[in-house]
Amino acid sequence: MLGRLFLRPAGALVGAGAAGLILAPALPASGAPLGTNWQAGSFRVGTTSPVLVTSRQVDGSTAYVAWIDHTRTRLALYPGINEPPGAPDRGPAQIPQAQRWRLLATFNGGFKASAGAGGYIVNGRVQATMQLGLGTLVEYRDGSFNILEWLGRTRPDQLVLARQNLEPLVWAGRPSPSTSNVSLWGATLGGGAAVWRTAAGVTRKGDLLYVAGPAQTPSSLAHILIAFGAERAIELDINPEWATFIAYRHRGARDPVALVPNPQQSAYRYLQPDRRDFFAVYTRAGGGPNVPYR
Image 1: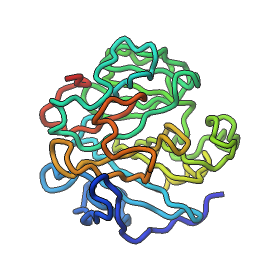
Image 2: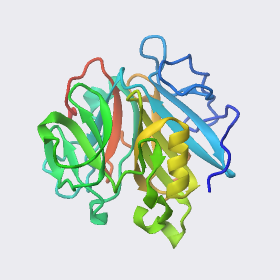
Image 3: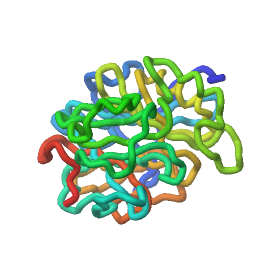
Image 4: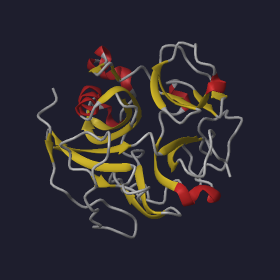
């Protein structure tokens, strides 16, 4: 059972070349959950950062949370070198050089295709077969985000991207009933129930949440998302090697700061070709309704 959530005092977020960097408290942001010790994660767009970050103590471990303002950002989904293996549009497997000037953040995708956990769409084209009934993070061509239970009614050409990963973790502001069955939520390193887990959620206002934490069960992860206002959510990748959320404090992908402490991954991950698929968060300015490959 999830214990009481309480705010952690402002602390240092670790970034390559910037260990011990203290991020300034964030200015108030419309739509961000109130009563939270938010810090500005990225450079400002206008007067505030559209990416805010924080951490909370949960039953003796730390959960790392990012909030992304859907009105000022665009989401992109990039195939990696190997994942998904049959992707017809492989792309650069990293953030394209021409797009780095507007890069706000990057974070890990979901399970490998071999896990059979779902499909994948980029720029309206199916890269891996979509599966009915699975939780699906989507971005529409107007830049709005949503998490759906995929029923096959949405045409791929209506979407900038779609990424499936198992059934929904949170639906209508409640944990999925199946969160009590840990075996349904991925093979864990060492076989334990409480491991590093990551997830993406959508709030009632349509903003995006990213959550990562060690020693999390599916149920505890779902409760953290709900505490931050998630109406719907899906689990992303799990186990300690893969949890990655990186924010960029200056344009040009400069000053990368890792929200999630992960000694197995550099803060420069995704600025060079990576084996796994991943998400990028861009400013809306300078982009259109597509994932840019150049």
